[in-house]
Amino acid sequence: MAAIETKQLAREFEGGIKAVDGVDLDVAGGEIYGFLGPNGAGKTTTVRMLTTLLAPTGGSATVAGFDVAAEPGEVRRKIGVALQEAALDPLMTGRELIHLQATLHGLPRERGDELGDALLGRVGLTQAADRRVGTYSGGMRRRLDLAAALVHEPSVLFLDEPTTGLDPVSRQAIWEEVEKLNAEGTTVFLTTQYLEEADQLADRVGIISAGRIVAEGTPAALKSEVGKPHLELSLVDQHGREADCERVLARFGKPLPAKDGKLLVELEHGTSEVGPIVVALDEAGLAVESLDLVQPSLDDVFVAKTGEHLEGAEEAPADEAIAG
Ligand SMILES: Nc1ncnc2c1ncn2[C@@H]1O[C@H](COP(=O)(O)OP(=O)(O)O)[C@@H](O)[C@H]1O
Ligand SMILES: [Mg+2]
Image (cartoon, rainbow, N blue to C red; front, side, top):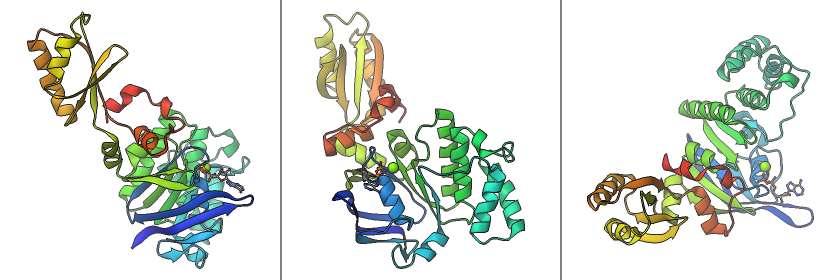
C-alpha cells in the first residue's frame, strides 16, 4: 500500500490563485520523499491538505490508506506533523509541551512522563527539558517540534521545511534524526528549499514549481537526466599550452568551452577517469595546478525544467558538488 497517494490534487484560493495545481504523488511506505521547490511553489499547501488541515478544491489524496477528506480522523491517528510555522507556547517547558501532546492524543499520564524523557532524549534536549521554550534556539525549537510530532508513533511523518534558517550543525542534527526515524520504518514526506537537503536525505525527489510537479525521481536519476559530470582544470604555466591540453582531454570526453581560464571536459563515467587524465597530462609534460570534478546539481534540473534557478541554490558553494 502506498503511504501517500494523490490524484490531481489541487487547491485554489480566493482570487483564483492555484497554489497546488494537479499534483500526482505515489510515496511508498518506508520512503523519504523530498518535495523541493522555491518559496511560494505550493509545498505548505500540499502538506496542509495531506495532513487534513486544509480541504482540497480538486482531486483526491490518501495517507496511510485513508482518504484525507472522508476519513480525516483515521489519517490524523497515523501521521505526525511538524509545520513550518509551529506555534510553540514560549512559557511552557519542553517537557510540558510533550506532555500536552500526549494528552491531546489521549495517552495516559504515566505514558506522557515516559515519552517526555524518551523523546526529549532522542532529540538531544534532555538538558533543556525543564527550560521554557522561549529560551530555546531555533535549532532546539525545531528539534522539539520533531519530538512533539512523534508522540503517537506515526507511520507517516510530515516535515515542512524542517531546517530552513538553521545553522549547519543544527541542520545536520535534524538530518540524522530523520534518517534514524526512517531506518526504524517511518515514511517521511519532507519539504525543502535546499538542494543539498533533498540530495542527501531523499530516496526520491519531486520538484515543485508554481503548484505543479515538474520533475520526479531519485536525485541521481534527475541529475543524470540533465547532463554528465565535467572536469574543470587549470595547468601550471598554462599560457600557450591550452591546445596541447585540450588534445589530451579530448581523448577522455567531449571538450566544453573554457570558463574563467579553466579548461573543461565532459566525462562519461565521472570520478574513475580523473586519475587517468592526470597521468595522461603528466606524460604530455602538462602539470595540473587545480582540478575539480563538477557534478550536475538538482539546481541544474530545476533550471532545465523551469528556466529559473532555485532560491537558495547559490548558497551551496560550487565545489560542494565534488563530494557527491
Ligand atoms: N490562505 C491563502 N490564501 C491565499 N493564497 C495563499 C494562501 N496560502 C498560500 N497561498 C498562496 O499559494 C501559493 C503557494 O503557497 P505555499 O503553499 O505556502 O508555498 P510554499 O510552501 O512552497 O512556499 C503562494 O502563491 C501563496 O501566496
Ligand atoms: Mg511553505
